[in-house]
Length: 300
Image (tube, rainbow, N blue to C red; front, side, top):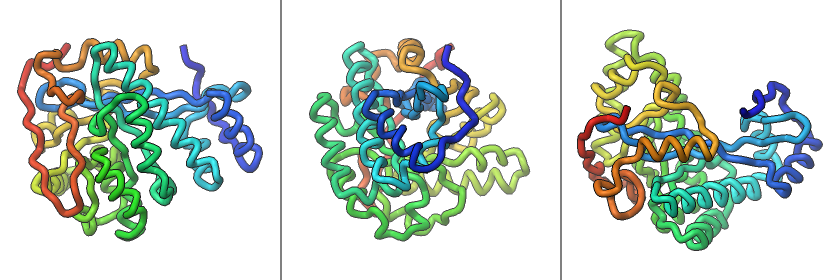
């Protein structure tokens, strides 16, 4: 059983030094949050969520150390560590007959790293994975920061063929600029999903957003789904996929493997490229037809 996550955030230069040692000593570990397709109930991806198993403080959640890393020179090494761990797990699942797309979160600072795409490309090659077996999630802050913010890195990743997801959408930025980003997926923030039952106007706004991104060839994912009523409403609105504790919370690698064994589409029905409906990288301003979803009986 994992220790209870600490509520004591580490601060200052001491945190940077300890985090540096933590990266070197392999104290970072990944848990995985399933992404479930609403049309058929099968798992379409696993989002990698980093944790720091500190030898003295116990399990530290990302909100308590990622901000410190973003303010230091550690972010590049931390991102490289997480990407490599996620690709290692994806390759292991593929070898075990459980091919699934794994997604990794990037921060805005990562997009300013001119070597990001090269690092990702080397990792894919080293682990024998196709670009579509990895998805990189970027925060919607890139919209607020202007079209030039990280444009080079985003273009390089798109050229590599790695699909991009726009995370936490709906927390502040407008739709202006969305079409210019080479994203294949947007994830509607949990705070927006929680307001679905506030009234018909809110639901109409969310449905309009889902319809709009579908017209752009972009897949929509709902975050923070906590109840069957919410799941049903999201399916009726037209969301493609969802995440949240109604389906499953974050799982350690062993538990995630067990989950996939019972919730991946049967092998004979899977696409040959390795993921379950993984979206292709979309060029800025382009339009991608959403991948067709075969309806089957939902698992369990």
